[in-house]
Length: 381
Image (cartoon, rainbow, N blue to C red; front, side, top):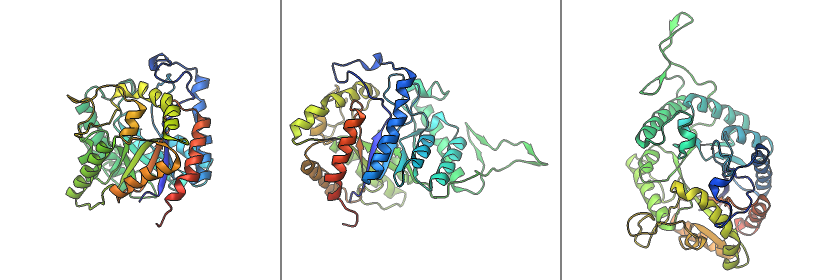
């Protein structure tokens, strides 16, 4: 049953002239003073969520985005600071883009944050999808196979560093440690200092395709499934459960997954759709070209495959696909309960902050949801 309610803030500034007919995404360019505003917004939203009893604020790592949609380059640093400004709220990394990191540096940074915040930073890793970012940092993105190979070796190093007292690694990309003389002996192993004190490390990864599922499910990595249509989510949940079973891990359907949805509360569904529509459309102006339309037709075929829609989705598509919950609290509660019935192992729900919505309005939505929806899902039911 769902007991942990979180929100995703990818780091957008308060955008102007939003909506389908608004400023084209690629035409947006903001000065540094505006881009820096997102950090103060994150602090304000985190403190508000903390007071309201939310579980976690997830943020996203991105670079070079003068367009203003995603401006947080370091999630561990951000989360550690936000933990000093709040009392209980956790801060999730959605996601540290591993090909842009040295895995030992990421491991050290996370371990330090884990200690300094007493376990309030949640680890998340991803392979990336922006060529501008990943290729600029010297890692492959255009070559998908090379990106995957690098990522999987980095994960080997990361997990060894977290879990072993001392370790070595000899792969295609990393030789740790190098065979160098050190204080009269040849170096053969190293120890991550410090290691996280909360082990095993809870780790999350986005599930964007079926190719990801075997890798994460069989290794005990948890999966985030965000703004997917109900048929796609169902396919993912069942495949994740089956792949975990192959590794000897027996999971209830939906267990170790987080269900991410769009949300807008209003007195009626029509009013909610009308008000959130420009924010929804602004999101897909930026994200649709990256392939982030994860809906399916009546036969379960993903959009974009032959015979299915291949266009930018509308908010009504999202509501029909049950990727967006729009309407009064009673309708949203019923939508959440329906997912609980289908997926008895599911315990986490994450609200996606639509990129075109301003901070003041999102605060109001968080307040309304916390006061009239979350009490319907108390722990220990």
